[in-house]
Length: 594
Image (cartoon, rainbow, N blue to C red; front, side, top):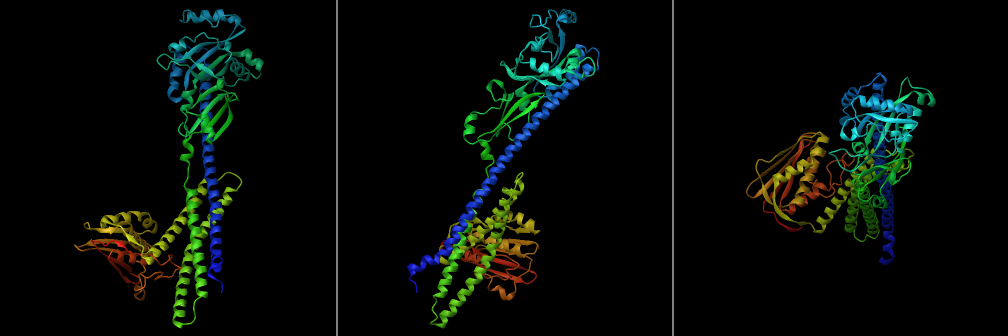
């Protein structure tokens, strides 16, 4: 026979192997779940980028449509009067319906010989001192002749030749030659009296107007050009009116005119204190180029520091914690099996009584291990299947189904909670058996505690279609251990819902000067008379484990906790009509260690 020093490592080898395997599986599962969380965070950012891009382009399409409609007003009239144009612009309600638009106007196309006659006509219309600016002889002009709203700043812009401004010249040429709306690059908007004194970044969109239906060639368009309908836009007002997930709280947006990210071309930047430091901390960033009215814009989306915190998930920690508990449980069960087998092999056969007792102990152990293995296998099997499903989802080509991934992780979390409860039951039995169950007595109102526990079971009762009624006619106070009393009430209510077959469950609390009385009544399958005496024993069950789960520890732990308080518990039952569990507790409970 091997000595204890040589046999001990060999006996523990299977248990240690099970522990290492469980830890390996836990590490792999946690890594996959964490990767899923990271992918879900990236997908959320990608969705926000897409939503923000679409929202911006849709808004710009709407503004271009508004300017095309304004051009239609000019095309349908031989001569648009200034008052008529003002009334039309006011009818647009631009400030409310088109955030960011500063003004709408019309710039007339002139050639060198047309300038004197044009200036004379404008002065005759009631604009004294009107003059085309900047002065000087040029072959072609695009002169602002109408501009609404007609505020002091806009009044000073009448007569301005926008074709002479380098920042707007390319957009005007592109609009004239293509016949399509054309946006300028960065243009600084002069402040309006009564508003912020500093200039603000913006841009203009020009829509060409021809004296006949749209010509087909650039040369024909130049020959028939009458002018440009245009809109001037304030970039901050326009962009800050956008709505997409996380904008200005979790995600920043910078917009640059052109295809390069240069400070000189910055149209808009949402406020954040240190964009560079965000990138250094691993912030997500995406840069893309879109075309607005023929002009390229570069959009830069960056997550703020708070974004990872908002998208943080507890699922990896749950999987890791659950895996550790599972690994420890496998280690304990495997070691218990190995040690029990070794003890059985070394059992003395010298006396028949000792052999019989050993055989009885083995039978009890085997029955418990069978039940425990069945109870543990169910959540473990479900957990394994869910982890395999998560593995396939994470390696599946194509978009990641985040909702399906989240449901899988939630299923894993539920199975780990079930494993935790099983382990807690085993630990409670261990404490009770070793006499290490310590009660912490405090003043409690039993009726209020019962009502609180009933509220916790509301969702479970609704799912089972059970009406849970609590009857507490008057307060019943005493000195008890709150945590252990909650455990007693939980076990009794859980059994009533489990075996009640959907029938109503009644919970009643009564009391007198010396003791409190708690009754939990169901109207389910009931308990046979021959089983009444053993349902409170350890690992004993009055029903088949094939139809009802559990380790057979709930009522055993309940009885131990009630007796630790100096009370008693018993039941009254009729098969097929239901069961009533009755608990008597002295109101002046006893404390200490049991």
